[in-house]
Image (cartoon, rainbow, N blue to C red; front, side, top):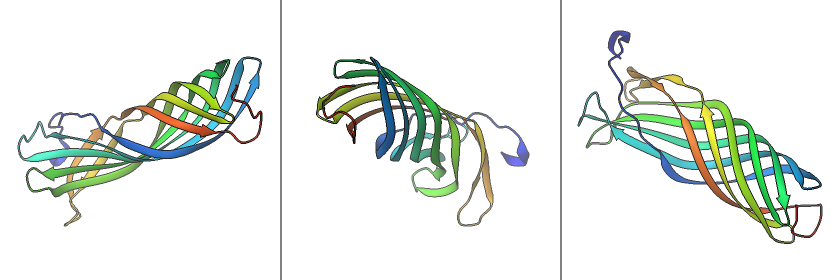
Length: 187
């Protein structure tokens, strides 16, 4: 933004990629109800890009989530060896922002930040062997808006200022091993 003047929206994009990580937590059961606390950490390669709408053909914008973490509480309902659950709590993401000169991949400006927000999710988990289960989970991360200064790496000067809105939708598949507790596949 030259002289701090708003020029316009530079577009948006969806990020795609993969994640790998782990979680640790504790669950307890009362009848068919299951309650839990969990911390999850993941390395991520979630990136997306778009051509600049303000300077088409000149610049390409890219965002990347390098890692994220979730700190959540859970409540679930068990039916035999299947658990349906909801979760909610805090989320944190580690992010990078870059603007490239289109065609040359020269970095015109870059910035990074760590952002805190909230998380909600739902999942289904199936116990398939003693102490083993597999789950499919959807999480939505409500990350706060952030204003960032992109700096040119070679000169250290301000290239641009952006206002970034980040919401993250994740679908994960995981395999869990349960230490302690019953040695049967139940909840």
